[in-house]
Image (cartoon, rainbow, N blue to C red; front, side, top):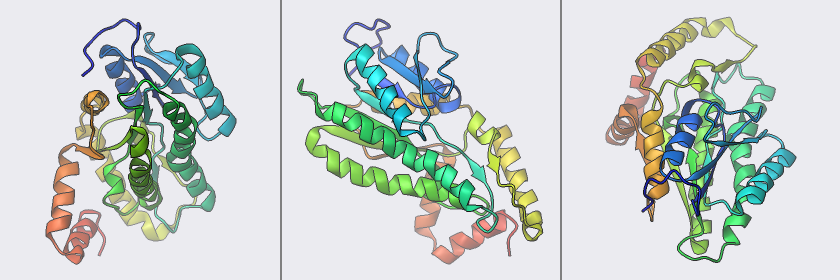
Length: 278
């Protein structure tokens, strides 16, 4: 168990991607308050929290990923915890989504996570101090369990993280590296508020598009802030043997239960009705 200690002497080292706002900013601050030496990444290399050591990172660029990890190793000598948080949110119906937009989203949400894992795991495996070589925590989404209209490609990226993290957990257990997936429901973050939309808009989806926009606006207004998710990540980071999956938020508990209890056609009917689909 790690106790709160704001000094960096012998502190465990955490690397948090996408730490300039939202979940990442809160997670970095939470880990710092528990005594981690935290390196937070952003495209600009600037972070709002002066207690977090800033590292420039473009998660879609292999060289940038390598330089980021090398910088952390040069400064701290190791990485004990990787938090894959950087991501994008796309609102578009599948027929409207261009291949270019889908590729860009997957490059961040899936391949970006893969690049970070492949850069950090050799560092973790190289540790010989015993007691477990490290932890990897990836911020997924309820969209990795339940797909909804207007979010098909975005949900597909979160489903991909499910499969990736499950295989990775089994592969790395022999090295003492734990792998966990944190799956929040709706929370009010800049990522959701600044969701990207595709430029190709088909009038056939206009009615459902407006219903989708209403749901998103309402959820942004009613959703809690990201602090609860940050506290959960802090607990997972301090757990000796963390679980594979952690869900948080009312939707993350209720929706999977309903999906497992009711026939698939009934659950799908409920989702279609919610989004105004016949």
